[in-house]
Length: 234
Image 1 (tube, rainbow, N blue to C red):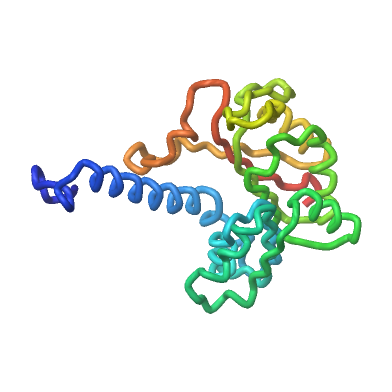
Image 2: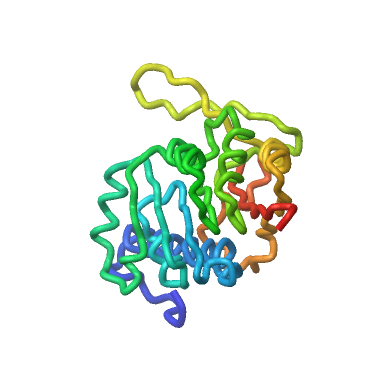
């Protein structure tokens, strides 16, 4: 703890110290991810309409509205997470956020079929277990966004493959393995849809600011990664 040297943790227990470490890691993770994923693209966010797929409890939807987005539609498959949005502290930009309980990729397809327009599309950990990446990015292209931001679990291979990963044992019936898209698979599908792909270089973040972000720096076959897409004709 800064400035306390050998002073005991609050409560004098290892448990309290572990809780403080976890809270600090979570806070740093959120701040660092927002900085790397969104803060440098404020020029795109400002005055834009945003489709946020995999929106969780909507916290980042609210952040994007506060950063200047005119409209944010957040789509989340888990109803309990969608319900949490109403429990967030009141913010002045709340009226610009609309949370939807739906399968994110089903919502995307429906929006594409209706020729909806969103200037920014966010794909937050929604590509796992997707067998038709080409179809997903073709649907994204139908929305004619200025930019697409993606983040999630990927396989590090540059070959266009889906890596099969066993699911954690749950005590219930055996379930099929996860399908984890590789960098190469995402790149191939996005380029086929007409996009230039730029993979975020997380090594730009100083080591002192990486607390809680170890999954972005794994050297194994699977880890977290982020990318941006810009249409070639934009």
